[in-house]
Length: 304
Length: 304
Image (cartoon, rainbow over all chains, first blue to last red; front, top):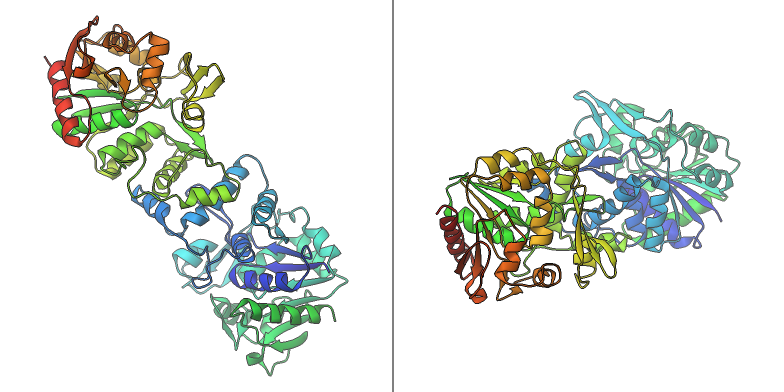
């Protein structure tokens, strides 16, 4: 089976690990969000790709929910002492990866190439592709002003309500090599339980990716990131309320109009109506086994 | 008193701390070697400037002899796991400084400017100047081939005998801003007990610096890096034997012909003849107080 997953960071990464656990090696292609990417201290950081990589490789910190297990913070603390910015938390282990990626990018490698090398190093038989190698950055428009994604999310603690999301560079961005072939050759297309606006949105903002999914001949199934109308983590519920008018399955499905054939929701969100097929289950991925159960159901729904 | 010190890394740094301990705040200008500088993992590293900074700021690891006390190595280990080179040992605390410097240099700051900022952050009232802001790199010619300084020193453990030292970029290199003014305005010029070939040599390879010292109207005093003809650390004795023909005070003084008026040597190197005034004392800086005693004697000799 060739399965394509569109994914943001933590929640998407956990779902990707569930799929990875139930699929054969090599069957999974994950297309990751790069709208959150940023440059800090001269380092090129791709938080969502890294969350996926760390989670698949068993390196992630499950309690903190992001970054690496066993992390230390000495370099960042030292850097701050010398006047470096430290609002974006980079641990020492995490930094090791950023150094390698940043150096490779500066030497002329593409993000796709660097990511492939990292995944191979981790020994994870999954194809992990950035949505694009071109510059695509998410900005949020809020009553307090317009902010880059990480400035809003991390530095401002995503406290500002979001009126609109902007994907700078999206018009010129081309899908990364392999992305369209993966979508066109997939037996099912899945959308992870990630934030539709700021995690999946930047991927779909690449017109050729959206078009490829729109013209699919296989089913596309999304998993709602909400449980009982609430986000497990992050601002997805607040953003749906404000920008989609509500947090029901219909509101989530409305984010993917024309792109999904079914939406998997939590039982806590029933009863509900939606313009697409609804499948209900327990969606909280409290451990890898729960993620695998969810993955199996989503695959069954997609390959029905 | 305005005192100028030419200095390499560890030994020079300890002597600089001795001077700093006995001079009034603001009286000391250290001109540091940049021939050892290198780029690793995309980071711009200035080992000798950092040794001086760390030592003056009380941050250096006295036992290991280089780098910072309380250092950890997580980022480098992680980086190596992702395929990054790890032959040059960069600790996490050290890395924090390299990130800040590299970022500032990429943003257009000069090494002089970055160094001034770092010294100010450390709260050390010393002027620390790189010999030059231009690219100047030390290479050693050995029977096994030609190597950049750090490749020879660190990666090859300075095992190869050195036939010749080359300072690439020296012809075009201009003294960093402030260097000539400091030399011309000094009441004494000192040369630290650093390796004459690869630590002081690159500084003197900048013709305008050598000329300024050559035309001095004050005294210039060097401290020999040898004790009983042996280096305290590193390959200075082997290099003097092979390239200067011996390890006596006269051989050391021969490295600075026309540039020094006196050479401070260890009592273990007496009796000796030399073409300059010789002053003997205990030169081993086994603790800060010993470095201060040495500094006092050198200042007395220079201001005689």
